[in-house]
Length: 331
Image 1 (tube, rainbow, N blue to C red):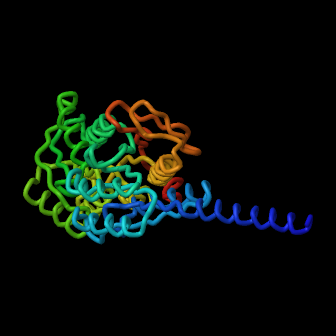
Image 2 (cartoon, rainbow, N blue to C red):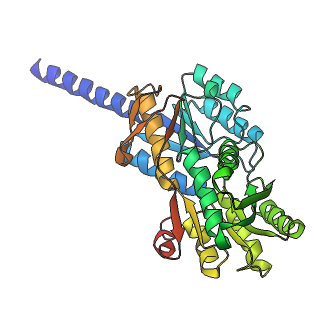
Image 3 (cartoon, rainbow, N blue to C red):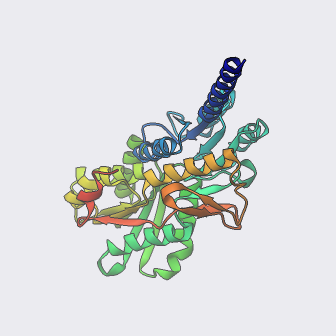
């Protein structure tokens, strides 16, 4: 009888352990990006996978459309819902178009957050911004000014899509803060849809139609790289400069060629890491993500949600010839 009792207890313990393991392994987080094949998002995925390994029992499903469209992301989101994921963290191509699909996800018990490029509040629990929108706008204008003799001259903006939430917010911030940069004249804004070839053509056309432009600022990693290539290919190094938000690994050549003197970006690895940490804490019920809450985010410390349901990760960091070799080997 004693042996039978011990066996029963052992079996019960093993079953309990197996159930606990299965439960942990069932935490699946869909990391939805604007488009696949984008270096910024590939780097964010590295951080997400790092967080998943650190947390244990978490699977991050890195996914997105092949082109930067809301329709493509909706298809991806519906697929994740069908897979029964625990959470969805999305960088949105459109702030409003994704809302119905994300509401459906919420109704199925899936925790939804947006990161990098936000969705409307009714479609998510919270939005994780890579930095303060005001600081990003100011940083972009400061970079433009620093590339101009005497801080004065014409510049243009090369953005992603016309519906990209984050780029539009940063552009609005640039326009609002232009009064603090009296020497700067914004000529126009064009859109390359976060596609390398289209961004190249837009930058090329921009300089042809506006020969007085001295700086192109691109608040998107695809755009800043494409515009730098145009300046190099057209022999305009030293006459026209490119700056904005870019990855060190991609922009090292532009720094060394002189197409840009400096650019800025937060660490996309940290951004993917933080988004995964937040999604996990929501699934585990450790936070509700409501305004005023502070969420544990591993090595990133605590991330506080503001009154507007948005949180900011870190200030942008400037990269130039003094540090590009160091960081270009990281991301």
